[in-house]
Image (cartoon, rainbow, N blue to C red):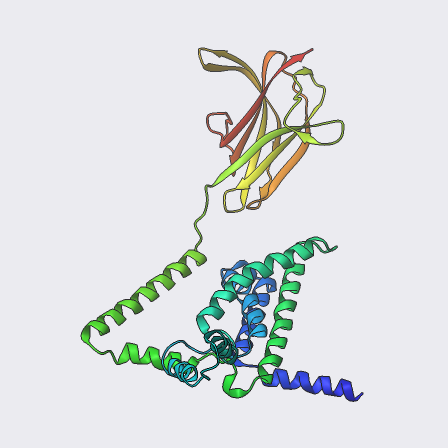
Length: 357
C-alpha cells in the first residue's frame, strides 16, 4: 500500500510540476487527436495543421527531453569565460585531453539548436518504427492504432522527461527561454539601432506575415487536380471477377446478355448521372457513321459522390438484327437531351455486335 501511495504521489507531483514546454506539447497532441476524430473538424485544414508537428517534431522532442534533462551551455558570452577559466586553472600535470573531458562532463545537456535538430531527426526515425511494429500486430497500420500508439509514446516519453528534469538541480535544469526570446524580439523590433535596422525589421515582419498567409491559403484552399469521370464496361468471369475482356459479340434477338457498366466520379463534387443504353443499326463509311435504326434498351440514373465508384450489373436484349449493330452506352451529367447520341454525350463506350434471329 505504501509503495502504491508513493507512486501515486510521484505521478501527481510530476503532473503538477510539468514544465511549460512539455505541457504545451501535450496540448498540441490533444488538439491533434481532437482534429482527427471530431466531425467537421476532421475534414478541415485544421487537422493537417495539428497533425504535422505531431508526426515530424513532437515525438523526437519529448524523446530528446527524456535523454537530456539538463540545459546545455552556450559557446559564447559568459560560458566562454567560464570555460576559459576552468581551462586556465586546470592542474599543470593534467593533460589537455583530460581537461576537455572534464569540461564536457561538467557541461552536460545539449543547446537549443542541437535539441531542435535532433528532435526532427529522431521523429523521422521514431514514427516509421512505430508503424513497423504495428505492421506485425493484429491491428495493422490503420488510423486508430497509429494515433493510439503515437500518443501513448509521446505521453510516456513526456512523463519520463518530466521526472528526469525534476531530478536535475534547478540551476542546471533545461528551460525554454521564453522571456529571453520575447525580450530580444522586442528589442530588435521596437528599439532598433538605426533606421536601416528598423527598415529591415519591417521587411522581415512583412515577409513572415506573407509567408504565413501563403502557407495558410495553400492548406485551406488546396489546388484541385483534373476533374474527370471514368466510364467503362466489364464482364464477369467464371470465378466471379469483373474484367474488361471477353465481351459478347454474338447475340440472339430478344435473348439477354449480362454486362456491367461502371462510373468513377473524380469531378470533386457529387454528380447525378444518366446512363442511356442504345442498340443502333449503324453503317460506317469514310469515317462517317450513319444510324439507320435505333432502339433504347436501358436507362440508369445514379447519384455518385466524389471519389466514389458506381457499378451496375444488368442484362440487354436487343431486337435489331444485323451484322453491324452497335451497342452504345451514353453517359450524361444530369438529364439527357430528347435525342441522345454520341455527339451530345459526356462520355461514350460501345461494342460492335451481331444479332441473329
